[in-house]
Image 1 (cartoon, rainbow, N blue to C red):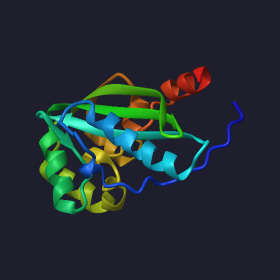
Image 2 (tube, rainbow, N blue to C red):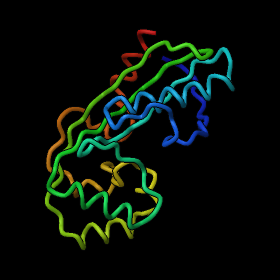
Image 3 (cartoon, rainbow, N blue to C red):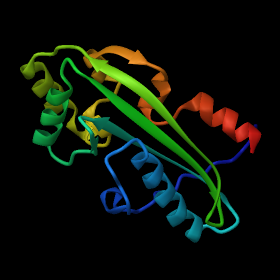
Image 4 (tube, rainbow, N blue to C red):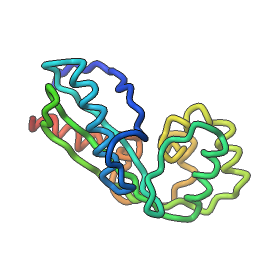
Length: 169
């Protein structure tokens, strides 16, 4: 497709986005807030933003900023299923072009608490950047029992959906 992309960080506080309701649409609201922020800074540019949230026990799970939070989060997923949502927003000049929301259902294995603790202690720098505190593409794959839908969604971008959407814009 020969597009040139430039990464820019949307410097927003995700937890302060308006109207978050602990539902699947939180990812869309956060991705849209990121797009609006960037769209105001970069006029006449197509802005593409993503956000991934987890819905577990009717609560949105966010990134953790300390080791204990990561351990608690992973232990809460132990031998249970949660839903991961990745939103994708295309915007130009603060006008929405396209939005998508992809759901992946994830079931964790039953993992020993000490294995979770060791994983977090050895990988905190990486997992603290990931919602849910796991990296499926790395050592976090030890936790997964089943994945229903898109593997790429778990990484943070449903690449197939992204390319299809980009092609149709």
